[in-house]
Structures are given as structure tokens and as C-alpha cells.
Image 1 (cartoon, helix red, strand yellow):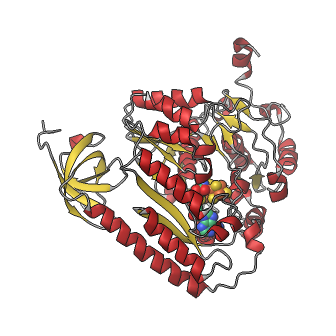
Image 2 (cartoon, helix red, strand yellow):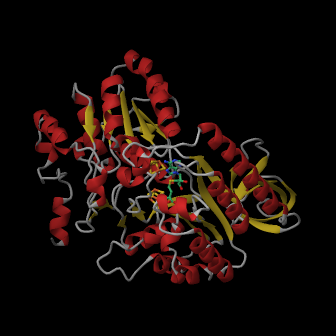
Image 3 (cartoon, rainbow, N blue to C red):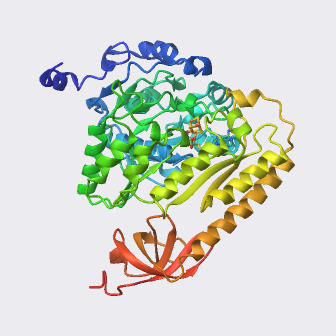
Length: 515
Ligand code: SAH
Ligand code: SF4
Ligand code: F3S
């Protein structure tokens, strides 16, 4: 298709069979939803191919829906990871193009969306609690639209439970259907039935979706979607589909654009950023190459999350060692310190190979800060196996860790395993681990006493409006007094006091930002 044809085509929204949506009737829609609602299936997911990834640049809110939200408000509640937060920014962008304005008050909202997370049971429970809370509001005002989206919607069991027990939910859509929001809202407005659209087909990347970013200092940038790692405890490969990388030129353009708008920091997002580029036909351009290209862009800070130890190659280490805007903090989830448990988790590395990787990283980047994620109480984890997680925590010297009790997720291989370890034992282990995490965090903080650090100032501290708060290059929170005019700037702060999870300090040059 040439450029002219593309332009002419771009205002026509089509469904998967290329039938323009504006020509469809309600009956068509009903059939369409039935035909496209296919619950995700792990066996099918495992067989998914690398082909058929199409990149689209022609998203547009259809003309008849551009003013549909004029004078109306939307509210999106986000549960879950950075990926979900960024999806919320995209949905906010689409709703804004439809004329809606944001509100933080449920009573004022004509559209309420819950952008959900399925990673652990307590994440799901929170959402079901909130769905229940919204019922009286919906009964009082039947015209509002209550929608559930995000990772929970990709699960058949969740969709069925909502349809059966929470009939006040008007709209359920999946993580691959976000770009269809305008059509889905229109359908929810005019249909008497619940609208459900969850695609298990995830082949495409839609490039030009609008975004309303949260803040003007730091920005999320997706570099890839999905996950093909199939860790046996994890639901994400089912909720987010197969690995698809955005083209380097699109990522580079987005980061350049953010830099030009004055953003000071970008965080590259992917479930496993080190797998970036593996899905390209010519897979010679990988994450290390992307980081090398971003290194040349004039933006002060580039972070990334999350990196899987398995694909962390030497070239990437070499590139990161250049420093500059590539920061010396690496979040490298280990999950367990025992090789047998790691094998049962399908992590595809051992305690020893993880430690070797850590050594290599430390040699190349001597000042590196490492943080991690750990799961305790994987089915039948013995005391001895757990102790290996404790010793690994110390041996690596992680400065912080997100720690979780294993939560069985329906449809994952680990969930069907018999588990002899009681919840009481798992809780005790978590407490011991957390005590160690706190100790190591506090120790890492102590080393900063008297040091001068560079802080990207984000705003007032939550506790005290007279105090400003920001993050160091290594992602430590620093609180200090200074003028509001330096919000959004990177300033030197001398650390005067250290706590377990934060640092207090004073600005080195007291004249900065003072008019
Ligand atoms: N893609 C990232 C992790 C995303 S999920 C990675 O592989 O590093 C974030 C964290 O949630 C995981 O690192 C893991 O520690 C935790 N997690 C995932 N599934 C879980 C489950 N079923 N129970 C408990 N914790 C889980
Ligand atoms: Fe889940 Fe593993 Fe993929 Fe991370 S790498 S999202 S833990 S399957
Ligand atoms: Fe949760 Fe989905 Fe993220 S399950 S952690 S919101 S990818």
C-alpha cells in the first residue's frame, strides 16, 4: 500500500475480517463478540508462532465518536505493574480524544474502568471488592458505564464470574483490545447486554495510540509486549500474549520526542526486556543495540524493567558499562536461590549461573546496585531450599527486593501441584526474608551518609509539603528542603541522614532555583 492509499484507508476502522465498523449493525456486533471471545488456553499459547506480527500506524478515534464524551468524565483505577499503568495512560489518551475529561471522584464519572492485575490472588480479590463497591453507584445511575479491563479480563474464569455475579459490569475487554475502546464504549452505551471482547489473538502492535502521560518528568516507554518464558507459576504469558518487539525506529522516535518535550527520564518496559528483538526476522538487533542507540539521545536518564537473567548477554553488559544516561541500577529478578526450585519454576538458570552473571555485571559496572524479586513457598519448597534464597540474598548483596508468597494461578502448571508446605511456614519464611531485605536496604543507605548524590526532583514529599522528594540514579528516594522551582530538575543533594528506605539531605547549591 502506498502512502496515499494508507492515508485514505486510515479513517476506516475495520474488524478482524476487514469489515468497516461503521457499517455494522448491533446484530453484527453481537455475533462479532461471540465469534471473537475465545478464552486463553495455555496449550495453544505454548504453540504460538513468531509470525504474523503486524505494526499499525493508522489508529484514529472514528469521527462519530470524537465528541461522544463532551461534558462527561472518566475515572480509571489501575492495579498491577508499570505495564498496566502505561496502558491506563493510553486509555486516558483515547478517552480524551473522545471528549471525556478525567476525574478522581467516582460519583462524577460517567465511565469507570478498572484496569486489573492477575499476578496474585490478593490482586484479584482487591478488584472483586471494588467491583462490589461500584454496584450501588450503578444502580443509582444506570447510565454510567462500568468496565473491567487488564489482565484479569484475559481469564475465562474471571469473565464468567463477572458475568454471573456482577451484572452491573457493562463492559469487559482484554489487554489486546485497548485500541477498540471507542467502539466498545459505543456498544456499551447502546447495547442492553454486557459487552465482552477479549481477543486471545495478539499478533499486532498498534503504534500511534494517543497517551495522556502521568506527569511531565518521567515517562514509560513500551519496548515489547507479551512474554514467552512460561515460568510455571506465572499467568502473564496467558494474559499478555506472545513476545512482540516494537521496531527500534519507533522506540527511538518516541524517546527523542519525550526528550524534546523536556522529560528527564524514561523507563523502558517489557516483561523481559532482554528478549527484545528475538522475534524479529533478522534478530541481529537486540536489547544491547537498542540501549546503545538510546545512550546517544540527549535525555538524562534511561531505566528499564524487567530484565530476565536468562537473556542478559555480554554485549548488553558492555553497553551498560558505558554509563552516561544508562544508569547503574539493575533490577534482576532471581525468584529463588535454589537450583532445584528454579528448575521447577522453569527459569532456565541455576543459582550458580545467576551468581556468575552477577559477577560479570559487577566486574563491568563496579558500582552497580542490584535489586530483585523473590517468591517464597513455591510448592514443596523445603527449609533447606529456602535457606539458599536467604544466603543468595546476602551473597549478591541485593539492596532491595520485592518479596511475595507464592500464589497459585489457575491455568498455570504449578497450580496443579500438590503442596505440603503450610501457609504458616510460608509466612514465617517471608518475615525472615523481609527482615533480611530491610537490613540490607538500611546498610546500603548508610553508605550514603555525607555523600553528594544527583536527585531528579519529582515534587513535594507525601508527608510534608515543605519538603521535596526525588530519586537518585540508583533509584533511592531522597527528601530535602528546596524551592518548588527545581521540581523537574536534577540537583546535587548532600545526604545528612539515612533511613531503611529513604535518605534525607540538603541541597548543595542553595542558590539553585532561587530567583
Ligand atoms: N517479568 C518479570 C516479572 C513480572 S511479575 C520477570 O520475570 O522478572 C512480577 C513478580 O511477581 C515476579 O518477578 C514474581 O516474583 C512475582 N510473581 C509472579 N507470579 C507469581 C505468583 N504466582 N505468586 C507469587 N508471586 C508471583
Ligand atoms: Fe512471568 Fe516469567 Fe514471563 Fe516474568 S518471565 S512475566 S515471571 S513468565
Ligand atoms: Fe499484573 Fe498483568 Fe502486570 S498480571 S503484574 S498487570 S502484566
